[in-house]
Length: 518
Image 1 (cartoon, rainbow, N blue to C red):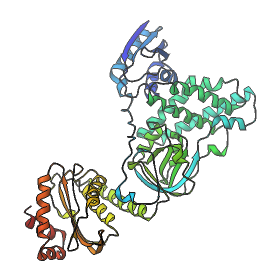
Image 2 (image 1 turned 60 degrees about the horizontal axis):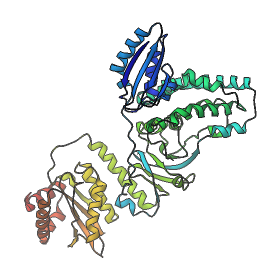
Image 3 (image 1 turned 180 degrees about the horizontal axis):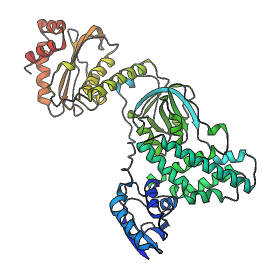
Image 4 (image 1 turned 90 degrees about the vertical axis):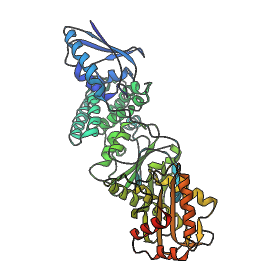
């Protein structure tokens, strides 16, 4: 008998993917190979994916293989090389759960009077679509609805459904690549596992094949559900997914059939959406815009798939989900953990501006610059037409993010409004100088917006020119110097006229550089 000791260095422990890799290494040997988890006093057959997962091996657990049989020496040498050189590369780094602290809404969006509910944005993004509510099939309930059948009939039906599910999963793997293929391959290894098949076909107390499937899935889920590792516990959803893959070959019940998405849709799941359901809903079209589902699967393969496909996903409480009805217009922004139900014009206007910013950010990624003078022509917006003070400040702060002077236009927007709420920055002469000093500002900047029409700035004051000063927290002296010089210059009509009559952004840049001594 040989023993091979090791400490688990896998970030996610031994779940389906590394278990599959281990099983492929051990199954070719005649010797019996058992994995012992010394830390948790568990053991399992190293030639079974399910048994390996059941050992509940997590990062840092002390383990060993016990190898006994005719080819134990060869098996020991092969496993030793695998553990030392390959095992650590069998998995990806731990999928980080999104931060659960509540994000402050952008100021512009907070003006909306639409119903805004909050959750946990576990896959980041922005989307709009019609709500489509779906329920998670309950296999036990389906079993109760179907007539009783003999043990022999159950065996034949389950055997056939398992073979069909395996074949369908293999076909699905051929259609995808990368991380999606890796996830499906791990599921395929589970579905092919002899212990899974035995558990499925040996249920002798069931009233019919669907009930037998439900009992088997409950039994197979137990090692995941009882794991001390949250990552492994959330892999229970993979077992439920396999159950649904088998169930669709046992029944034509409508609840097992997912809807076709004919227009831009945000799917709202009254439960936990499985990885296979997400892939089916996505299909080959782009109508799946976002997902809202119950809490409890924040590091699941469903979330990993959503991130892979850049599909926004909000994890929400039952109380939040119960507020959503079918065919409502939803605006989902998981960056701020927010779902807007039936967005009003203010929310719609914010969405338009935000999408424009994101589109420009994508383009600006290709033209990064390491030089950030306090004023450039990109920061000058001439002859603009805006509907409100909120919009003007959002456009100016968004432009800072587009030009890489901040990582968060929203944070700078909040800093600007904190000043505005203390006192209005309108100086007279139809000019406003909104300003802030903030760590959110990476590079101190002067932004200019010249308007075609008067804009209400509050307190019965209209403006036609906005000069925004955004200063890094560590550059207060510069903030005060620029502000005081600019205020003095704006007292002179000739200076104001030069700004208002400048023909292009470069002319304003040169004027301000000269007058402010930049």
